[in-house]
Length: 485
Image (cartoon, rainbow, N blue to C red):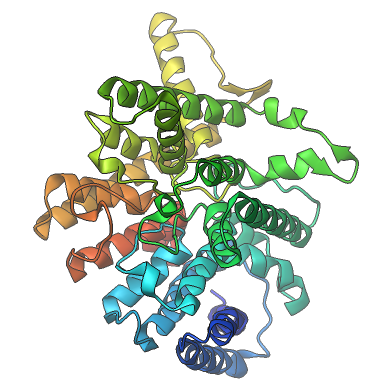
């Protein structure tokens, strides 16, 4: 294990991350809200710690193997989440405890969107901007950004890319060189963010809100600058902008790359993709169920208003964004639980969404169907196909393994919360919301996580990391085989 190389790279990346603490300080100067000091202090601390890690190991240049890649990814997320908590610790508004500061930082960086802060409307602009910036950086994965510059540092980046990218198949690249792949991902990500911010601004948000919400929308994070979330704006146009860009961000980014190439625009690639079609079907079914139930209950005054709320909330929760126009937990009958369950599906592989991912759910259903066929035809040979391509058995085995590990982590976290005195509904929904990187839950965590105990917050913080790193990346570190020479 190349420990000194790992420490050197971690120090370099900490120095890189420290630059993200300067824009909030600039926002504090622009709005004169007095919140910039905490960010300057955090910047100096992060830069100093990064230098301490880098300087003694600056001459250690070794190629990363797969094991080092996994360890570096986990270390990097842990270190960055911890450094990200420093401005919250130093800031007097909001006045957060150590545990709350770490919870807020990891929730932002993992794009979970679960918050312990109450009174967002009165917070300094710098803090509000910083929370959204963390989500934006975490949305595509800071490691992918780092991969784009690793060739400059003399380090190969394929191991980091494979450990970080979400989805069941991680060996595919959009371009021949991994650095070019990372750059292409970020070009797409940045362009979508600009387009989203402009659309929000045109729909009626002021410039600050438009920029902040574009960060959390494209990252599918769900943070807002207001306690009432999207309900603060009370605008159908803003809701529709949010829905459109959430769906775009929930798609595999390789599809965006294939659709918008130098050769021109080719939208047919979307409709040829099985995962895209499955995602749209899920959204239509969810919206239809929510609309029919709400309309029958007579909660809203008109069919148009009912459709607005049903469509927005169905897309927001199922893509694991967690934005709200109102508290969905007060909806009638089974709808709140249905939406929580929908977050397990999440978005497409290779997107910024959380959850198990649509492709894995497709493969699980196809595998279930194949087993039923084998019961009828025991000697039959049935392959699982996506489009015209038969998938190798190792992919199916990996999906089942992931599903089993995901379920195991979910059960352990939920039981841990219940052991701390949390009621069943709150424990279930909080675990689902954090493991799926959703944010809002039911019961005590319907609005925020401020009221739960510190022990529960640390359990949920770990669940966020498991969800963001897709379980295996973190779980593999706990296996004896990983540490054997």
